[in-house]
Image 1 (cartoon, one colour):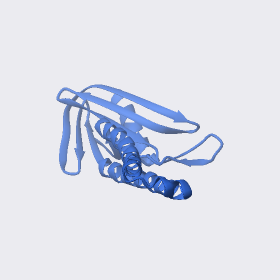
Image 2 (cartoon, rainbow, N blue to C red):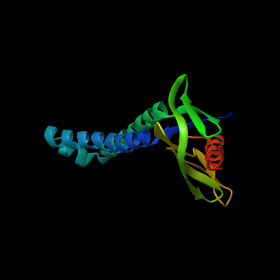
Image 3 (cartoon, rainbow, N blue to C red):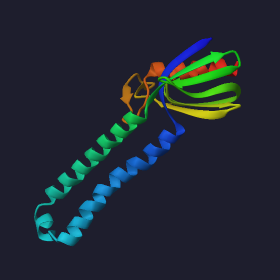
Image 4 (cartoon, rainbow, N blue to C red):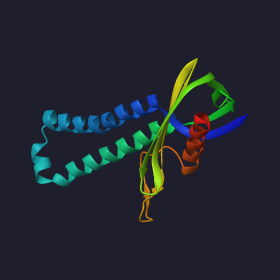
Length: 170
């Protein structure tokens, strides 16, 4: 038996983040525009445009922080146990998937020296699961560390997912 522990999201979580971020970004802007239109403080905004910029920046920061909070709630700690050709996937004490492995697809997006993201799709006879991991921080080819504000995993977790993919493919 081989055991792999890592933090990642699933493809459904990525869809949720893809919908939540633009919604949280645009709804406050829509609210500000509707308030300006219906309440009519045109003269105040024309005389003091700094207030409009301040409201816009606060809405942007709030949208980013709420997106990070939603994303943090969607990141889970997974435990994968391999028994030869069969697999069990756990999150906490809940079994998500088990069965004989039929297929495994992986995709790695590189930028410079390190991987920026890893996608691992595992298909079994009883279902499938799609893991997604994006680096929170990675090193460019010039040696400069770059942070990813929407990253989900540390490099250790990404190495663990990559070694799981290599072991399944053997």
